[in-house]
Image (cartoon, rainbow, N blue to C red; front, top):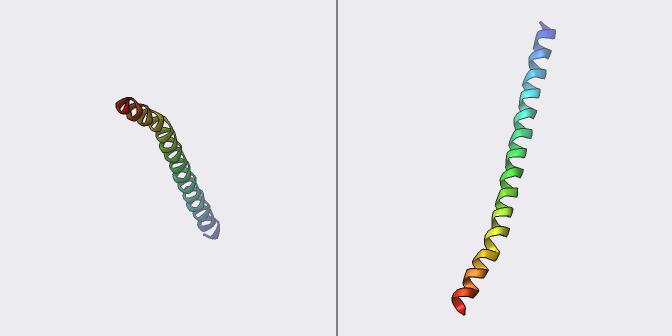
Length: 54
């Protein structure tokens, strides 16, 4: 029984750490995409702003 409980604990822990890692990765990817979007949109906005100024 104790072996079974230990196995269950390890599985739970593995699943938990997987979710943490997965969520962490998803968050990092989202942050990277956001940063990339900001960097690509900023010059474009600046460009159109300057064009409309002239």
